[in-house]
Image (cartoon, rainbow, N blue to C red; front, top):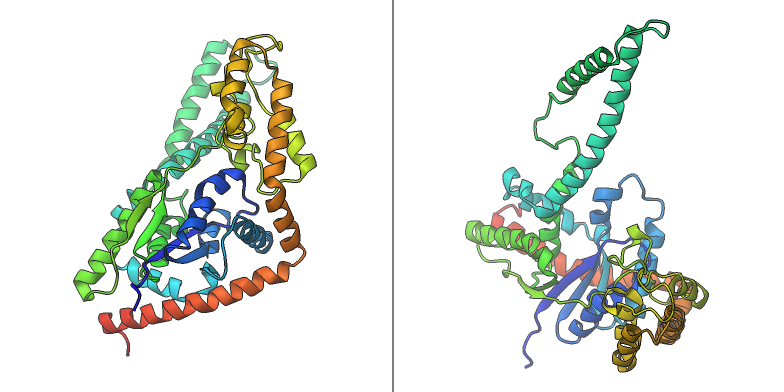
Length: 386
């Protein structure tokens, strides 16, 4: 009898089409893991709602596009379970039960929450400052009619005093310093994430180093549940992934929010436009100027897609023998050739979008079998199976 395989749970929030940063990172890793583990890949649509609850019209298409990219990248429905989070209601039940085991102060220590709040607070303060300045200006204008001559210094002091008073009024009622910024769903999403992982009794979770604090809460919840009620959940271990860093076309991190991505299976025409207009070396103005390839995204693409020639390209660039246009043309041809099989697979699947939902339906069925089994154990151990 063969050794029972360990379980892995991973997933993505559905944001539409994925880019080559995903391909050389998480998707390439998933494709390898599905041959070694029982793999469950979650379309985390509930998690997506924590920040886009007001923008749900494109969710269905975003799910389709993301799953198409998963399949194009080698994720196999025969080897893995592909399911939609919101289709498996047991996730929500376990989330509610787990929420009783976690304190508010523990959730407030979540690093992702702190980063989100810092970003939102900065934006909020900028908006408030503009509003308050406008109010103060209007009040000051009423004190000094247009025909009345007064010292600008006095006018400025009155405005400063009014602004100070307004800020005092606006900053009074805060139960939590940023309670009005964060919705309940965002605060509790790490508990839902714990439910996502533990309901499949996953042994392993593939993550980057920045996600370790999230997994630690999952491990804490598993240990606390097992201590209070009896053993149900394995304590999931992280598999740390050092993903290849793929810069965006502007040299920054590749991200949709920066509009600097190269999509998986990018259309040839769009790909050429993106590559030929990409950021290069601002110090290399003329072809014969010495270049600085280490800071140039085009050279990074050569290192990924044209590795056999990258040393020669680097040397020519530094010596000023090679121009940026030549470099772009060559790497475009390499990327375009690399993309062709992904492009063909995407075209094929885009014409059969109903097939995506057939795959999801089958994955939902398999996921539900596992989660129902887990919830029966949970209710029995908690003595709430009445």
